[in-house]
Image (cartoon, rainbow, N blue to C red):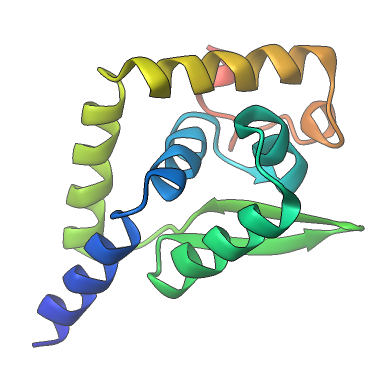
Length: 130
């Protein structure tokens, strides 16, 4: 029962295109601040925060404070079902034109510099360094 409830919560979180676009960025880049997401997706801070609350409640995303910024990342977990869902989502999004465009926009903005992008470089910035 617990696994079924967890899966239902995860799939409910994945049922919104805005949340899929946010997860696409996190799957690709690792840690992101709200401004990274806002700028890339042309979302308001309110919209990003609302969707991030939903993703956090589903156990997909974590948040931490870094000075005045809130940094979001995918939740690291041992839950097999969550890992399978996110891995499958990544595979699907890699073939989607809108997702590829969002990723290209994110990395172009990061090269220009955003509020914390250049200061967050490190192991969580997975593909950007490749």
